[in-house]
Amino acid sequence: MANVVCLRCRECKREFPVEPGNVCDFCFGPLEVVYDYSAIKKIISREKIEAGPFNLWRYQDLLPVDAANAIDINAGFTPLIRSKGLAEYLGLKELYIKNDSVNPSYSFKDRVVAVASTKAIEFGFDTLACASTGNLACSVAAHAARAGVKSFVFIPHDLEKEKVVGAAVYGPTLIAVRGSYDDVNRVCSEVADQHHWAFVNINMRPFYSEGSKTLGYEVVEQLGWRIPDHAVVPAASGSLFVKIWKGLHELNQLDLAGDVKTKMHLVQAEGCSPIVQAYQSGVTHVKPTKPNTVAKSLGIGNPADGFYSLQVMKNSKGSAVSAPEDEIAEGMKLLAQTEGIFTETAGGVVISGLRKLVRDGRIKPDDCTVVYITGNGYKTHQVVEDVVNPIEIAPSIDAFEEALATRVGV
Ligand SMILES: *Cc1c(COP(=O)(O)O)cnc(C)c1O
Ligand SMILES: [Zn+2]
Image (cartoon, rainbow, N blue to C red; front, top):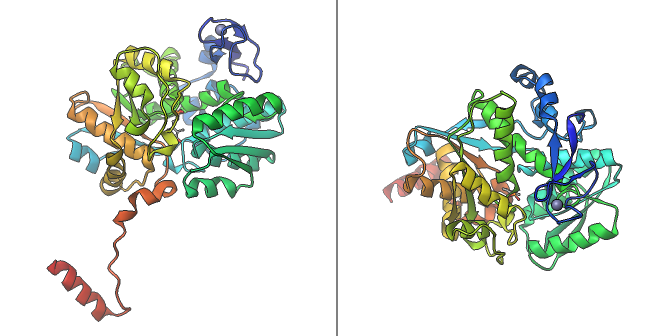
């Protein structure tokens, strides 16, 4: 916290005090946290990080909050798994799966909310709120419960039942808006002007988004402080994608890791792929679209960080690919059946995108590749319900042997 200097506008570079708010008063550009890296360099080391807690607070020197006040449900430090089955299937020698689906509320959103909710309580707010595509709702409600404060969670009315229940169980006030996520977000921006609440992804956004950097740090640490050749990342607003890149550069700047030569690949579902479309048509600004995808957690038609995502692709020599809607469930099954990891639709999007990147020769067999699996399959299980086809039998060994013989016969 002592390491934070100010907030700065990404566009006009004007500086602002560390206060709630997300846009520049002068040009409406997004605000970003600025750190004193020379001060951080004096206190940080690989050894200190490695001796830290087994959650995202091990990176507290690089986060804009005081970890002593942490609203802590133990987010982060999720497994990085060296792939065998999927790597073999794709012909890759060194593929890793960052399994962020096993966070406390079952998505990577626990990282961003851990930071945003801690900051909100530091600022003295007594109510947390959010505009959510689903996973954020679960995480905000969980963190509010942990902090002992109220929460207002705004969701699109047609969200998966599992995500609605997964949020409601923590006791928030749930508001289902008859519209798309972009409608939800617009309503919330107006509500945020009226009520003195901490909207984690609106007036807390500069702090919220910093939580995503830990997905960059962790992978590097878990690779033995090695920077991967490729990162394959799902995108909704594009914030996670941009912040992983920022995190890698911070490690390099602090001499904790070598040169950043990671090619950053962004993946979206075809039914909501405004950033991919901008990349493919070579423009620098993203044209909003109307989401129509089974990957609801990625259903943002007007992505706040679309412009910056395109810059990251350019600077990293990365790319963007979309997953056909009918390949998303297939991607979920492929990951489950080759690695034993059950991911939600966003993960199916990533696996489909990875396959395309390998097929197109952008990812080579010898490259060190990390794919980010950001959400849990139990939240979108209807999408793969056709796998359920049990052999039903009477409770006897004879019935079993008979069924087995019949099934084997087929
Ligand atoms: C929110 C979310 C993302 C990415 O969100 P950004 O807005 O791009 O930061 C990725 N995967 C899942 C499962 C999510 O819920
Ligand atoms: Zn500005």
